[in-house]
Length: 247
Image (cartoon, rainbow, N blue to C red; front, top):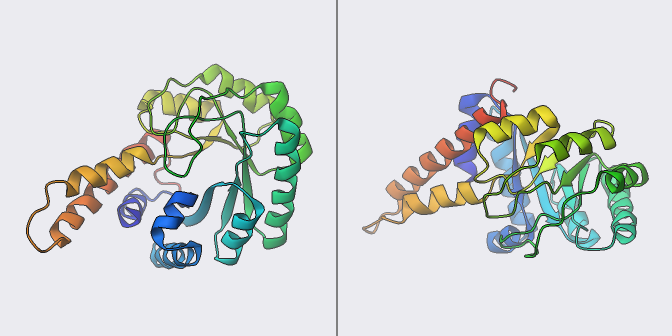
């Protein structure tokens, strides 16, 4: 998966992030292994490749990610009341400053179905609450809920993205659940203020479909096909976002 995404980034000369949520980390054999592998791939690439913790649920995992060499963190307190989310996000922010890494937080809640992410109904982000949240936490970016869902296609409320951009005074906004969103809608989101897009389901589906027909005792040909399929899927998203030629 990571090699295919990096192939796309190098071909398109685009910056990317390799992200690990708690489920990914568990399947990878632990955060130290995940961090070391991702850092090695990033250092070997000609493209700018960051290593990001996605949906970190607590300070313990965020601290472990810093120690493992992750270059940015997400603290996800989106299922808690806003006062608790602010309190915990401020603690996460202090940790991020201590280790010199960027911090993303989430307000509102992007629901859906994805391993390692709380499965629930989405709650759209309120602009007034978003202004309060960023004023009191000083996070580097904010994940917002504007109609998408983890693992599912959703309609994006671009007007709400614009409102949130204004309410947060130009803070970089993050769109989770980007798989299945139409290219035109993604371009509208970028113009409205989205600066980071998370895409997981499409990438995993491209890989799985490529290896589904594998036969014989040598898996390498199927893995090469899967890497190429992932690169093609990632390239489509890079192009839709206008991220090509920015590295």
